[in-house]
Length: 319
Length: 300
Image 1 (cartoon, chains in turn red, brown):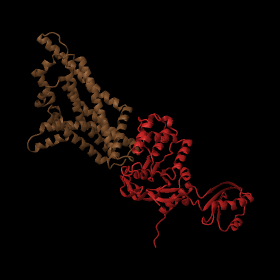
Image 2: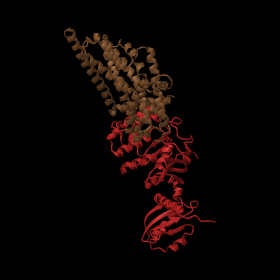
Image 3: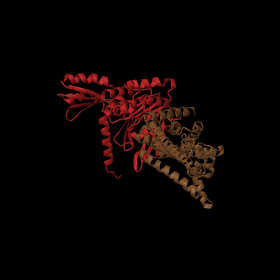
């Protein structure tokens, strides 16, 4: 499997602050990867290092299998939507995107078409000749999104891309990101975990400059081996139910509102489990409000953080 | 290399267009034009008064403005004044082939061009680092191409400003000094303007070197002002204290600041001009690269 972006024991310090503390992970090519972490976990530093805007203090970075990013070596192959950056205020949207397209190695005869396509994707074609200072915050954010998808980049780094977008534009941006699945590797840093959960197939969890987890999102959320049922009016004898389905591990939350069914993904899939369990529940008069596969990204993330904190707090024992 | 040049061309076009859009260009052009017009106007007024006094003294009656300038130009007293302005007798004497209005324009432009060049170039890089707008560009192209585009863009801006001030100064002089030889004045002003542009290049580079080393555009601009005073002071000290023995170190100092080559620029012989031009270009490259040494490793 090809790797689009890999960090090997990368350290980055700002003065006495260690922003990245031996960070290691590898993101497979073609993935849509979510970069999740608390404030100050090192997400923005990670993306800026990947784009070559920062230099690591130690460790090794591999971008598209070619060492640290150097725009002169593989021009146009990487794009970035940086956080907390301002577009030149007096330039018009069209001028800016034309410049970025040229630098992104878009052939001169295709620049205008590509710029217009990029602006259409974020619904800003009518603002092409407007100076960026005349745009609202959300519109400027959409221009920033548009610039990241110019040309034909193989790796697109998006730092908090949905910040400041209204729900309609956020949904459109999500669709745009999803439409690039398979065409490029996307790394999206965001605090909106529900957005990432819908979009991503790979996840890197950062905390205090280290990766707590890096791997497939569905595996991490145990979505291929777990179904959660939100119940109402449960009046079933759960022990009987457990005996009826001995090959699955059924457990009920203490308040009786959540039923968790764990199964072996090698023998069962979610359709089969639902096909057997749902009629039995309905027959017993149990109301079903919702069914979801595995855990939510938010709950899994918070559990992981809590486990990390517990491990950190646990006193060391001698042997 | 082709890609580097194509990026450089695109970035330079954008730098110039952005200067125009942001009205930076308008401010620079207005500053240069105003400085040239005010200087030439003051000179024309002084010249007319002098001519009037001369006419009264010599009882020659009224004459067209500037008509007596030729006589004046040949007068020992006036030549002494020019020698004092330029600061070097040999150079001053070599200049009497130029119309006085061109020399005045040269004096003015050598004075204000470095200041304006530093004023506009010092915030250029620091501002984009401060706002983060450089982050949209610097993963797409090399830092060297970006910095060179800033330099070329600012150098072009100064050239346009000097061209405008040349036209403005000549037009005003033509209007105020009706007896002036229009063609030789135009040629003289244009020559001095070209030399002033060459003289401005190391200052643009120095401004960008300061800008590459700082994240605050305001601090960069303040340092640019100090650099203008500092380099001027160093050149003055070098000229005053250069001598034998350890004082030869001042000759080396004079080679490190653009003002150390001002006298060579005043001279009309090609050899002097070529020597100054070469050194000024070397200084330009050295200043720019000194700043780039820091910028190439700077976190953005």
